[in-house]
Length: 136
Length: 383
Ligand SMILES: CC(C)(COP(=O)(O)OP(=O)(O)OC[C@H]1O[C@@H](n2cnc3c(N)ncnc32)[C@H](O)[C@@H]1OP(=O)(O)O)[C@@H](O)C(=O)NCCC(=O)NCCS
Ligand SMILES: [Zn+2]
Image (cartoon, rainbow over all chains, first blue to last red; front, side):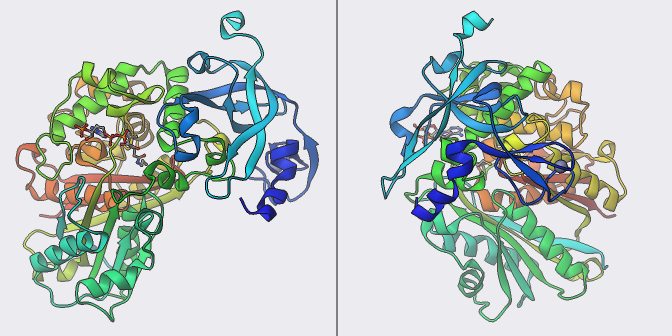
């Protein structure tokens, strides 16, 4: 990843910064120039909570080259209490135990090493709050 | 706008075609169409292609392909909309003829996926790089998430998904152009290698090479080129948010619904009028989501439609008589045109063992990414 891109992505990717639309209250993550719901251009900055719930998920068995040695790994769309939805790996658990409805906390982790440059790319990964069995 | 017809169609077989390059695949399909129609010139060419650049390092396909078929000089443009590139190439060609700007326009699609590229990585360029691919998602992974959301919301089962593959392989077994023209049992599908839970190998379209092309002209000139022109009655295109997380409901493909509404309204028909359909079954779950968003079956019947025979040849609304992307193969940029060819042949009564008797109205739906773009065409047999 070229370093300018790296710096551009710091607020959303490394600090979980989002924007709450002043028009309709929708939380957009990352921030956008215009709200996709009400088209307002006004918004205020907001930092997302580090907890979320899984909306849907999968376990990747056949991975792209950069993630070859990590498969099988779980990955999910999660929703924070503010209503922001985004994709995140789910780690520190048996991938096959991950599923919709599960509570997770968001932790700062290494996401990938980018192929040719080998640059370390960071971001947030989800960790189940309790074991799935305990949640049920 | 003028009325527009398709007068000739041709495609290469789909499969791992190690002996043919990107340009050779295109030339094979394009020259065959030109020969069938007996034309000596074209006014314009559209080449649907997802990623010549990433798959084989070749961009700028417009002039390259025109030159390959001896048409250097003719306007020729590459159209990209991921896996919907072919369908949107057709739509663009349609408007060029309908507007009166051109009379003879070639709409084509081509992809060479088997040439050493990291296919999983290249396909993922059709998803959101910053928000999705960064975290290690793959294309099968995105559709797996759609599948799990559908299971969660509507009780769809792994068996429902598997029946889609069984049905499409039954159809594909009757298609000599198909990449995998053989049947699989339900057990084989359900026990195939896991790709992205809950999707297994036999729920996924394969990695394919191939090309397809059709020739368009004004309907009132069509009889010069064929006895049986097929009219393009409606076209509709739509987008929805690129990232799955930004959709209202990850189990529903709103771009498919929106593109269909537009095509139905232009054609002045409804889903109940359609006799045969090709839909974008890149994964088994997408056929279920598409037939429900297209309105071809009730939402409550969509998941079980393949198992109940509703969408099989002989059923109320046969879907993917070609074998679909699953069995026929999915050279991404060529798929949208290949779907049109299946409908074209069905409406002309040329589908042999796959023929849907008396088919008069056909629909083809082609989508890109995890459903961020969708294009629908409705074709009509004219008496
Ligand atoms: C599912 C997928 C990952 C499998 O790739 P793979 O693990 O590299 O599989 P291989 O190529 O090693 O194939 C293994 C065997 O299964 C067969 N096979 C591969 N894909 C198949 C499929 N989809 N259906 C039936 N058989 C298939 C191969 O012919 C091969 O058989 P062989 O061992 O007898 O030669 C790959 O086909 C894929 O990525 N498909 C999705 C394509 C896609 O996303 N398209 C865009 C969608 S919009
Ligand atoms: Zn808003």
